Length: 320
Ligand code: ASP
Image (cartoon, rainbow, N blue to C red; front, top):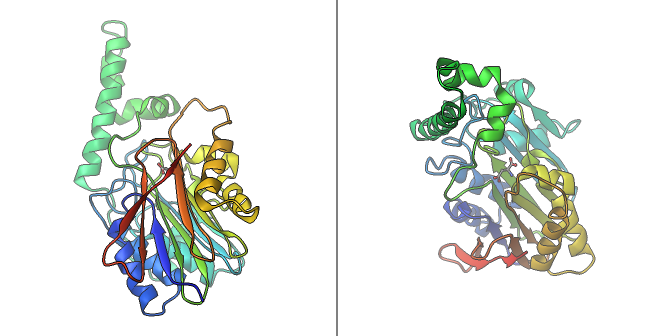
């Protein structure tokens, strides 16, 4: 039987100890991923996941999450969910309690969450609201500078202007600076089960209703016990178009080691024409406990814990 291990993307170190506690007690990979991810979703300092996540262009926090099991390839996901702080648990509930479906979005996902006893909460923190306002102001300032003197200056600032030209505004919002990105967590339990979990508040200032790769099987999340599990962080539109998590697992199945499989998956996505060259990152874990990651930049790491770890350790990712 394999030694349990849990790995995660940058900032998952907040949750990995909770996941490893589950695995040490003989718990399942699914329980470990959920426990670890909930800590990340509840981390107010993290502006890419759960409570405190950066909002969409309209200033509303919208969350995506998924879980996938390697043995059965069962998949549960939610997209564009408002008002529930732990979408990973709702995704798990879809997987376990709604076997006729894989993915619920928006109102339907919120209805399902309510019916299943999940509590509502305010997700937009003051700090995240402030970051969004700064973006609005920056765009408005630029508009003012570009506009003909005196022309419609009152209308260019704020939400009203946004509603009049939403797509244009979304295009102008700059990605958030600082530690960024969706959280990926992959666990292997003592029974040999693999589980991949992904959770995000998505591309900051995204168009309302936009669902990213974190909720889409094969894009941001894929898990197949015959070869391994993989997950992505970064520009979800690229990993959706590239089927990147699935591509990485295909490379694992073909015999590549996890870091090289991730690198090849990212290399494939990087061939796609895209005006928004935001970075993609990837992580993979095999059923025999080998792991690796890749990123577009030097210096990227991923976190991991084994049963011997006292705290999360970090490993470099291969560079594309
Ligand atoms: N992958 C996320 C998305 O596209 C965003 C990110 O990780 O930066 O929603």
